[in-house]
Length: 441
Image 1 (tube, helix red, strand yellow):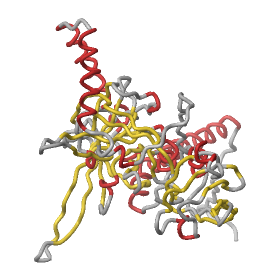
Image 2 (cartoon, helix red, strand yellow):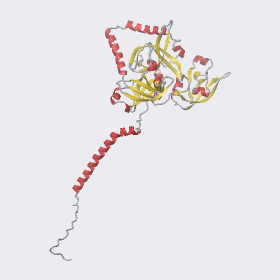
Image 3 (tube, one colour):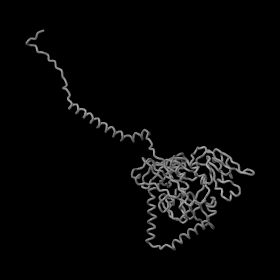
Image 4 (cartoon, helix red, strand yellow):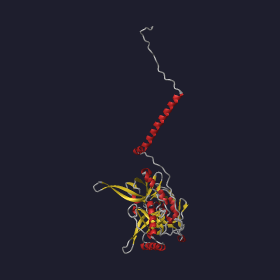
């Protein structure tokens, strides 16, 4: 059909995008990259900020792993065999309060006569003690044990006991605190209050019922940052160097109140005391303390050298004097290392002593003479008896009680170990082998 003058042509147009040159393409790519970076950064920040909350809400917070705690062992510098003393000889029957008092009075009297005491001297001495105490406050904590119960009318009640503890190790994930076993016994929950007043929840790491000590752990993530920067672990000393007459500070709860302090002398050092699965020294101070509430002994370098475990009373005519009996740290470091790493202290279940040269002359073979195979202990349950001579553990010769302690510390709860003993028959000692399953104490 032909066009007429009144008709208008229909215009057909197509929008065509102009060709993109290299410069424009580069600009667009740059914009995309910038926007991606901005949105990615915002997403990353949001994720990091919300992750801790999400983990707590979901209960999926991953534990922070850290290297095991290692505690270096001490060597007895004397290197001499120690005389054997029974617990009866060291808990009031063999050591009279009068003897301790006379010995301490003589030491103090000699020092007073030889030293030119002045007001300045006393002030400097007091300042030195106070500085040791103030530094120890960074390590002392209050352990609060909460127990839930009901009264006669079935109403829920909550009781809280307070005990002293001392920080013995800090790593990237936790602070490890030594305290009395009485602090954790029967507790439904545990908290600690640090010296600066901040608090944190703690949980039991491990405990040793025999020595009445326990280690509890506070997560670093649960402790306020300023407290983490302020607190410190006490330095572990060498108790083999502690001698009768040495000055020590008792920190923790020596007066029955946490953060109290006392000072005094080591009145007596009992050596070769028979203990469960070993032999130990016992430190006696000439001042009383509250052992059950946590009392720790520091030397004049501020190092931990022991902790109170018991008190005894003795006296004549109604006159009573209290002393403190303390475990020295050096004999305990092997067990302490296990407790700080969440392991149980290995339990064999004997008391014994070295076979002396006099005993060997009478025909007793060398080794560890078992004076007591503790009832229901691992050794007792397999048939090891009083009077047996322990000579080997895992084919390793045992000559002394110290050898036995070292081999036992190398074992773990649940290990089955071959033990060789010699038992007296009618006219000779016969060798017997047992498989003993190491227990936990």
